[in-house]
Length: 361
Image (tube, rainbow, N blue to C red; front, side, top):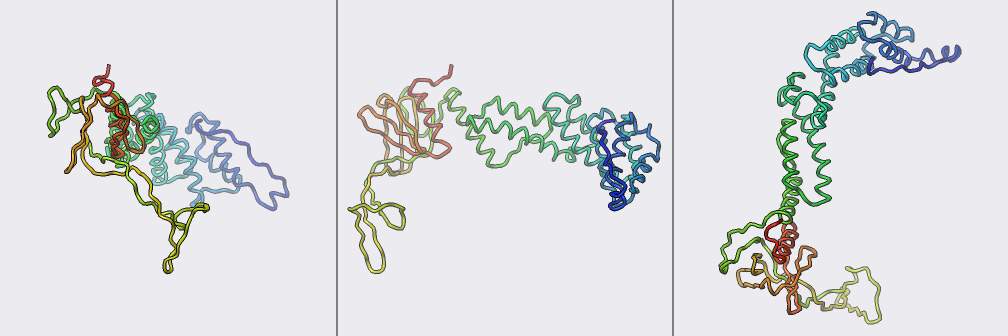
């Protein structure tokens, strides 16, 4: 009988038995062997399991209810995994096994509850794999589950499926409409809400925006800045205009782990140790504003300034650290910094506009 298997009993010599007693573990092995050899529980004499245990000095009592419940639950999990109707004859098998193991109705019910939860989760996985014959509503009815009672198990199965898919989303940094449709179909099959943690939702939004920027037709957006005839705006976001400036850099002994060179100088001021101050050219954000990409221009607008670059004057761009370096025909770069969420999308959209790929083939 599934799921029991024949196990070899431990053998002890006469003196070992005198010193250590009979091996109690043999009682549980022998019970398992009897169940493994029987085709049905009803074929086993009512007291046979109890007698088999007593041969090894074990009696059915409160000290071993856990062991007996575990033996019962093995069959219970198999029964609920294959259960097709509420009058399935295997349910009677469970009832008879509980009686032969001396389990109270309460203990049998507890074991059934645990077995049903395991089987229910596995059968929900079967629904997604296409191996389960019942849909989720039929399965709930079979297990006498209402919507809430099985919700935790169904959510767990959905999350397993989602995280497996999410690995691909993270790897490709893309989340397509087809991906969303597939996940939505899974939630419908399992009858669970499509709810995710805030960080996962934010990640999917980012991956979707990247997918849109890469694959979807660029649609004109409405803006409050004046546009020329035939000009359409395809993207707009907060941005910082960057310029190269000379800034002071303090080569502090305490701030840097570095070797001293011959021209390094130190000076004492009061009780403080000062390092040499140098000037370096660095790229800094000069002002914050809003950046637009149209089919004719790149436009930056702040409260105090407006800068524009004709698309025809831009030869290409590079992307680094959320900054886009727009290469101009005069040999200079116009540099703008964007947020983590917007920077790569703006880079993709610009390149598509530059190539004239407003509509994807």
